[in-house]
Length: 281
Image (cartoon, rainbow, N blue to C red; front, side, top):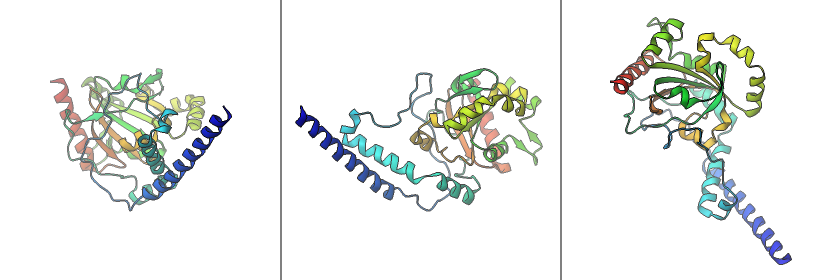
């Protein structure tokens, strides 16, 4: 028994040392390269539709530690996460003013599109909810942000002074809803501790957000989506904001980051109109 325990400890120590050696090399290999602004061409999203039963993997199980392929994959994921620290996010935000990619000129086809993730959070009206329940059956413009700056950038896709359009006004919002279109705000709090504190002071947030928006405003913990899922969705930078068009089947059909030009504003709402026509006719 003693020899078995000694052998297991020796194996565990060797495995740990090998993992960290591989991890260090992966950090070096995936060190961020010079940032290049590119257009989103391929659909963004996840392969499986969101549901209350959805659970996103956060790493290897004990059994996976004995699987070299899975361990190497996890090491690369951790290396990428480590290399893209908060300082990296700040650097990229300052360099791009929050425009991490340019939006596609039109929406992605339904049969090629991928799914929006499963996100739960605190609705300002209905308490704890799953976001997919709010999105299902409607064309949704989802604003995803983790800061006041990100919130303000996202608003540019709903408000345009040049065109004299403001879809955040009560009358405009109600008009959209009568057509099966809605705007949804997701305050994606960037840490579990901050999320817990914000829940304690939820009354202040309710006071700051117009009452007619409460049912479409969700306070959510960003950490419920693992790093690799956020990376797949290209929503990892906490300093900017993201605007995402989701169809009634919960598929991501168009996406933007940062601020909006007048042309981008027009493109978003043209996509929304066509997706609505496609979905309800």
